[in-house]
Image: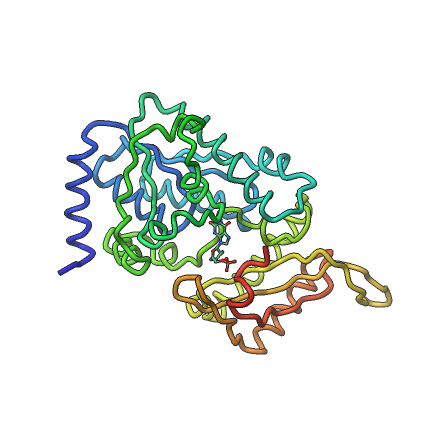
Length: 318
Ligand code: XMP
């Protein structure tokens, strides 16, 4: 019978045999899958695993530094690459959702390719692909791994993609990945993290992306997510986040009329993201969160809660 411990034991042995003394490159995202893949490989080949964690400037507030510190604390050989400016410059003036995704995918490949060249004679590319990704691999959703998968044109491949591929989690479902992660001693909080899209906040800022908008949305999102944690609601929700809408609305602050931004909050229950229901969050929580956002985040004067389920709505707004 399958147990996380036996999976770890056989997989580590297999990875050792397969990879030997060769070097492996792995892109960490901060998510569960890439982290569990990295820890498994680290257990098998130690410092021969070279991890790369890219900041695309569209992560949650403080996420880049916090996650990088956490990875270092786990003993992983990880290099943080802050490419925020490169991503944001490339996205300037772009409002179309699919173009945003493609731009982020392209810049990610460029950055990752540059970094992988700095690892001398690497022979392997490791990915945190899990079983549902294998099934869906043709539906390119545009995240880093999806981008990698949707490059069929072998002639035009970035150099790092000419590496041999190793995917230790490709037979596992998400809950099995979490159990394997727990058996490896990975922090519970990390394993319980909500999914977060590869293009990050770019697809939660409707319309064009500016540094100012990213900063506003990071603040709003942090208030919402920290609130869910404080109220013990985080683990009851499959995914949550805030969306910055491309409309201003009239408000009143003291004696002043304001004309400022509106944000939407979204929290869903789901098992695989294919279908989802909006979560009936307590009114008291929504009330407190809305007040906090409007009082603390300059430039926002209205908060709405998304009560649409998937289908027909999607989880993300773009
Ligand atoms: P939708 O909006 O399609 O989202 O209902 C379903 C799940 O997929 C995530 N998502 C993405 N993940 N790159 C990713 O890596 C993307 O371009 C992307 N678009 C959506 C979304 O966050 C949700 O978990």
